[in-house]
Image: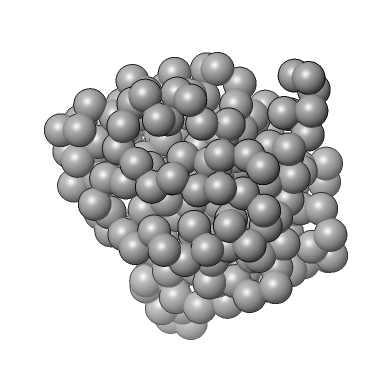
Length: 213
């Protein structure tokens, strides 16, 4: 049974994400300990709220380098919602620099007559990376749940794993690069599809553990 470190930096309720991972067969540890993050088999970086406070909290807890080290180590890493956005270099939402792990910026969804901001509710994924391990058994164009006013714009478009259409705008819904995966939506709020995604992540961790044996 793999151990997954869920990073706690005071930016959101972690219970739902942990429950989904636990149900998929993982052992979760909610932690802000660099040592526990290093020792875990995988890492999840969730988050709800604004970009600047998130980065301030990460820096005040000395979590920036442990996050970068975890990704560099090759262990599976999953960012969720704000945990996706802070992987980038900067955001139009604030002035703080992001983690800079993924080149690109976080942009504001543009107002349109027929859409609401924040984008809150269900939308259908369009897969850009069909072989991404997160999408196994989800079926075509699954519905997932969003709550956000900003979205990521990666410099390298090939790391987009999925997009959505909101009004006339095409918005990055997920990225994937090697062991690093991150989604804008909330798997823990996305019913069957979300639980399957979390299960897929745990299965990815299991497979990686078997390869080490």
